[in-house]
Length: 412
Image 1: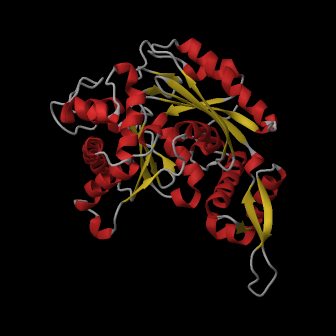
Image 2 (image 1 turned 120 degrees about the vertical axis):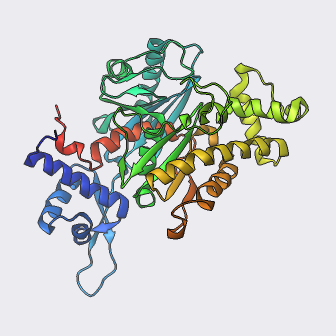
Image 3 (image 1 turned 90 degrees about the vertical axis):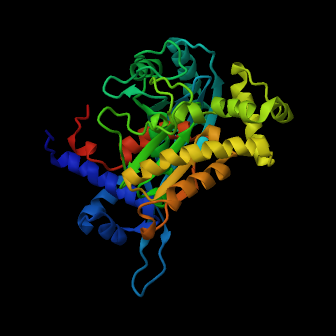
């Protein structure tokens, strides 16, 4: 059963609505905010005054005259708030300090041993994260907290990662509480693909104001889903596990027990293996691949470089992956009825153009809604730090983006 609400919560919700309108439509005037938000002019005036007093927005010039008094324009203040973001991958952690506008002020990459011990990882990453605000010399009073982007599945209620792939021994690890104790800050956590989608929504402003499917590729493949500007998480908080979409029978064995899933057939390790299998060792030597399990990251970097150079064998295996991804994305687009697919994540950098061509063909050539318009396939606006920026955006979006949770959750 949904809870009721009260006037203080409505006030906070209205403040988030106005700030979101300024972020996504700005620069805008007070008069324009009324129709954009559905609020009365008096309510807009009161909310804008609070946002100015809190240092979250600023007055920035005036609109061109339309015959009367020129209207003062409002814009977000980048230094109005900050958040730290941590993206955990099996072999590395990426940490970013992000401002209210979504700009990365400082970032750092930390190598992690494999196998890794959760407590040691949290201690190492927390200490590194806390150094970034000091180096950036920001106002610590405006640092809202720390966001964690972790491979799923996760238990959102308990704040634990359940049994993430490639994290040996990480079973039901209470990462949320561990990072809260290690940093002394409020902490938010979500799976990496959903965090990346939230980051894309937060940073993209008007370009990402509607719905989209964010296809994320790191050590594995996942998806984040935004519908009508809101995050779709599902009943258990694990919506978007597109890596378990069935693409072909008889493929590589997946953690879930199936051998037809997208993830194990399209991750970086699989593509390196495909090159050896389909094109032989001569092609692998030409590109410089070693093929060892400890060299996947280095091999994938070399393979992507070969794609950019036009190597036919490298392009062939990436196109094969694109066709496989296209099968899964086509089904997701048909189910969700989104008009945009966004490709992002560190592992996709440099090969998005090849993958996007194959995914575009899959979702548009046989789309059931193609008569109504094309589904656009675009690169992420964030770039390779999508996971870490998305993690920081969990904090900023959770605090300042309007959503029904603001009206029903109890805030301590």
